[in-house]
Length: 551
Ligand code: ADP
Image (tube, rainbow, N blue to C red):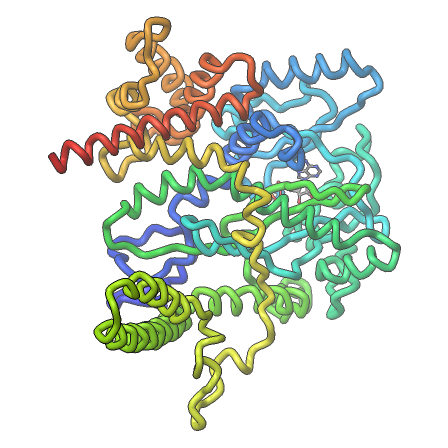
C-alpha cells in the first residue's frame, strides 16, 4: 500500500476505485479507464438498446428500459400502446436512480403516472425498467446471482467467468407485486445491504442455507429437481459475452483517450460483478454490471446492542478468494515471462534444427546437379516446417525439467476457478461485434489523441474519406446531421466536459446513414453493408497513400 503516493513502478497496480492515477507507464492496472461510467445504469441501458435494435432476439435478456426524464413521454406512450393491444397485461415497473447502488432510491410502480416527478428526477436521472414478476424462487424466496467476470483484455477480447458465484436472498416470502406489497423491499429487492437489516436475515456457515449461499449450491438443488443445469450455464455464458460485447465500443473510446496507441502505458484488466436474476423458466436476466464489486470476506455482527464486530463469512471467502487468486494467476507477469522464455527457447531449438537441416542440404547441393535444387528447396521448406511447427509440448526436451528443478508455484494451487469463455466461444458471437467496428471508425477520425468526442471536421473527413456524400446527400446535409444529433446527445449527456459528438451519437448517425443507403434490408444488414463499404474505401485510400508515399 502506498497511502502517501507511490514511488516505484509496479508489475500490478491494484486500485481501489478507478483506473485514474497519473504517471503509470507500465505494468497492469486492475481497472479499465471509463468502466465505471460505461456500466452506469443509463449507459448500460443505452448500450443494450443499441444492441437490441440490431439483434432483437440475441439481446432479449435485458429488461425493456427507458431513460428518465428524457424518455418519459416515450415510456408513457409505449406502455399505453402495449396495454391497448393486450388489456390483460398488468405490468409492474422498477425505477432505479442512475449511479445508485445497494438498492438506494429504488421503487416499484404499477403505472407510468406513479413516477415521482419531484426535483430529484431532474437532478438525478434514472432508468425505469420492466419488473420481472415471476422470478425463480428457492424456499419461497426471491434471490439473485452475483457472478464474477474477469475482463482480462479488451484488444484482443479475453473474458473469464468464475465457476461459482453468490446467491443473495430476500428475507420475506415472495409474492407477485400488488399495490399492497410494492413497497416491501425485503420481498422484492435482493440486495444484501438491505436484507441484512431484516430480522429474518440468516448468517450461515454452510454454503447451502441462509440468506447468502453459493450459486453452485443452487445449481445442485436445481439439478436434483431435474433442471437442465448445463443449458442454464451456457445461457449465462452467452449473456455475459453479449453484455461485454455491448460494452466494448465505449470502453475502447475511453481506452484510446487514456492510453493512446503507440504510447507507453499500462495494460488493464478488471473483475466485474454481474447481477443476474433467474426467471421461473430458468431464463437468466441481466440486472446490472458492477465495476467495483465488493470483495469483502467478512460481515458485521452485532454482539450486543450497538456493538459490532467483523466476523469471517465462509461463503464470501470460498467464492471471492478464488476469484482474486486466479485473477492474479492469470495476469501474473512472471508467468508471462516464463512463457516467453519457453517460447524463445523453443524457437531457438526449432531454428537450430532448421538451420542444421539447411546446412546438410546445402552441402549435398554442392555435390549435386543443378536440377536437384528445386527438390532441395522443397525439402528445406519441409524441414523448416517441421522445426517450427512442432508444439512446445512435442518439442524434444520440453517436458524434461532439470532434475533439481523445484515444482513451479502453480503446482501447489487448486485448479483455476476462472473459465475462459472468450475467445474460446468467439466464433458463436463475433457476428455481434458490429458496434465495435463502428467504434473503430469513430476512433480513427477522432484525430487529436486524448479526446472522446468527434469534432465537425472529423465527421466531415469520415464522410469524405468513405465517399458517403453525393447529390442526394450534400456536405451541407452532412453538417446538419452532425449538428442535430450532437446537440441532442449533448443536451441529455452527463459528460459536459468536452464538446463534440460522443460515440453513441456517432452510432446513431451511422445507423441513420445505413438506413438511408440500404433501405430494404433489416437494420443489422444495413449497418453491416455500410461498414463493409467504409472499411473497403478506407483500405483503398490507405493503399493509395502508401503507393504515393513510396512514389
Ligand atoms: P442497485 O445497484 O441499487 O443494487 P439493481 O439494479 O441491482 O440496483 O437493483 C436492485 C435489486 O432490485 C436487484 O438486486 C433485484 O433484486 C431487484 N431488481 C432490479 N431490477 C429488477 C427487475 N427488472 N426485475 C425484478 N427485480 C429487479
